[in-house]
Length: 393
Ligand SMILES: *Cc1c(COP(=O)(O)O)cnc(C)c1O
Image 1 (cartoon, protein in one colour):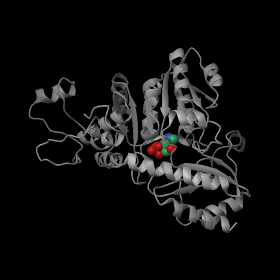
Image 2: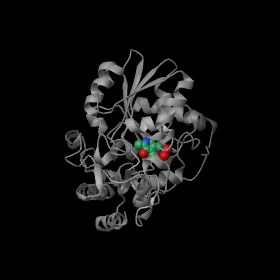
Image 3: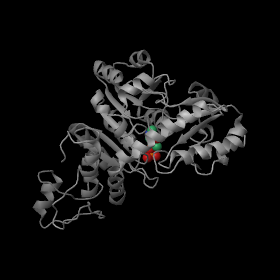
Image 4: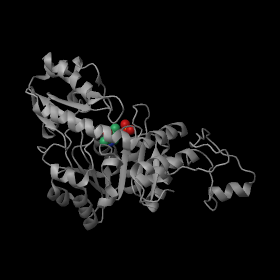
């Protein structure tokens, strides 16, 4: 293990690796095996009962997935971590570990669509109710808690309007109320925000986004205390959302360049947001790095950079907004974020397509809203692409 006082990128490159293995390979191999053999029944039983270290079956654990878990634990400054086959598998398994029938959850309202669906449709089937509150209203969060509230859940920055929840304050409410505070930090990445430093108990990520970083892997990660992760892994064994070793290896590789990529996402973010804010055809820009952002002060306190997602409204109708998006050439019309390629969506036809008009209105998601998930291309080229599309409307 790399000691905690090393820099972020040093940890991202070296933490969790097993230098000194018999072959001398500098890079962790891919243990693409579903099962492990034993020389005796006693040895098998010792590993099964956790008396001895080892691996039995890849759904339970695998050396490649273990390496990436160790690296993630260091990057999120948590005791341990577990990886999953997707961000949603990570989130669902976290909830099935933390709540039982009769429990209550408080969550911020602006959520990833899959998580919102999970709170509205899945948890109620198991007798768990979720109350959704405004991410930026601490009083509303506090007063929504009940004696049976087990989890306070927040996403920050939020999708697609980039609201920022004050994590230290939310963590304090969790302590006060005896609830576990879980944060989906996908939009921040461990480079930009360290939720555990702010008192958050559990950090989840869709590793499909910044962590893997190349728009080519689906994965999830959960970081937390050793005790919690132990329980979480038992639940993962039952629900089966394990990450395949090859995907784990790609995540290991992606993480090594996370610091470099985040620097570029952050600088592209502020450059493009500033360009958009000055553009006469743009009505509003949502980006936590802009002074005009309502939670800019909180963002400055809890983030070291503001990421690559910028959303903005243009001064036109739905059809013209759709045309604008279609006219972009470098930026692809696609739903994800955090990868090397710049992607663009009109949230009303993408992430919020199935959300009612009323709920969209509440969340500030208009027909004219465009979400840019900036990649790591040169900012001048992204801006030139936007400019040529603006010139056509
Ligand atoms: C993409 C995303 C998820 C879901 O992750 P998958 O890897 O697609 O399952 C969860 N939360 C946020 C904030 C996301 O952007």
